[in-house]
Length: 274
DNA sequence: AGAAGAACCTGGTAGC
DNA sequence: TGCTACCAGGTTCTTC
Image (tube, rainbow, N blue to C red; front, side):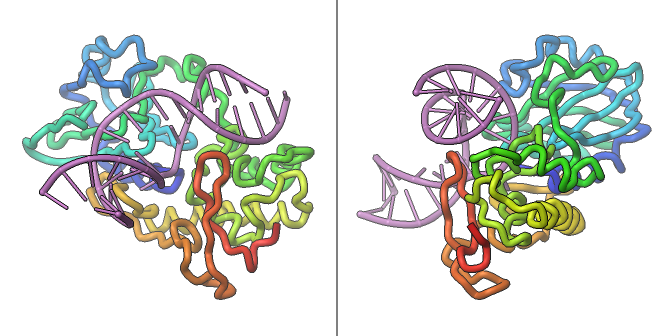
């Protein structure tokens, strides 16, 4: 489900509620697949009950809830994950995997498709989870720039879209915002990455930051079932993503859908150069 | 090494 | 209404 802007939106909201609060009780569905990489899941409640939340951070699409005692609770929302903060009692359906109770509210992880992951780390030792351990630079940091992309794109024949989706190249870019960034920089997502000129790479790295920042301002993009932790959708309106057959907002051409790997990619063949 | 494809899951929806 | 086919924003593993 969520890419960097959606996770960042949820992070901000969860941060406002959780920081400084103490965990009272933890419920988890022991059979849930979101714990499949997490050997210590049965000890999770005992380990974190009573601990205070120090910070809520994000790395790529991973949420990192930092607790007292050097503990980090990692939550990845996968494709369909939601973190919902709510007050009072409420039902718990079969898609709920984890519930953390605080003094006046609770936070629930729902994930129908179960591509999400939850794990607990000590002293930020993420080595047991390669996806998190090997993440590339944050796209909004200055380490993510034209020099970095040029180095990563050099000699590569894969479509630029495929490389933008590589979390080792830019942590948190997903299927929507890779298409959006290609559109802003007028590059076809299908173009072999190694054939993109220096000044185009410059545009692309700026476009990535631009679309991500705009989407964060809009609290993410609502497609299908994404909701913020307060239960509402985001306002970001995609320029190309999901707009097959509609007019390009820049040149009036017709947006088409192509396959990149097994993913859909949307772009305007009129103004995005191959 | 890099590229392509499949696999992991369930739910929603378009089309017949 | 009911069935089938296909779609889905992520990550990881296998194969060539």
